[in-house]
Image (cartoon, rainbow, N blue to C red):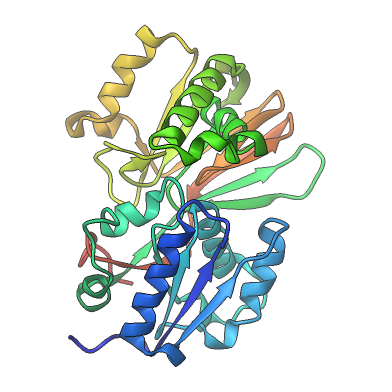
Length: 324
């Protein structure tokens, strides 16, 4: 085996994630490759992002360019880890350069797929010996409430406002996350399809003000790579220095379909690629950042760019695409 570029690995493990059992097998693989004593397993805690960011901060001394931060959990935990590395106050600069490796531990696994393909076709040993560390500039969404302090949310893969965020919030409800039908073959897909489709039909429109003009929107989507919520069709790479922006004004399928098809055609992609956007939502609406929903208050200004500071990831598919 080729000499490993990393001295040790840390693993963020969510014991309640969708593919927790698969995550344990991946951890066992890591221990076999690195040696048991050079793999530190950190189990996430309940309570959302804040306590887990503090938990990861406690291991700052083990982070750095020669450590590999593996994530045996879903996209929400991946997002939390990236936000921690980029934005946690007081984190040493060397720790911010820690490469991450998502281990396909969640439901969508969008970042894991864009970095290294599908879990069933990709050998962990191959990623560790042939993968390269690439720099990726995620979406930085600065949210400034009408009366309040601005907060910047990071999204490695995508962010959206409106319908898909409304659907993500519905899918994230305990009754849907813990539906007993998930235990049946194909049950998760059926439950998510029915719940998601119903939510999309139920989602309200909202007013958006941009460049001085007031418009009605149903969905406003920002994509930083080729994959959006398990759909991998956009002609864009994570290492491109632009993002896709697409706005739907209503939920009528016949009007949405042509624009959706145009999004997937490389020759038309320039119409949808941007490096910044600025708008204000006039009604309370839902947003989601890498699948994690959040409610956005009315009169919040939203400024979207690519983060000046990149995060780093180990990738087979994006080798030699980015150097930093």
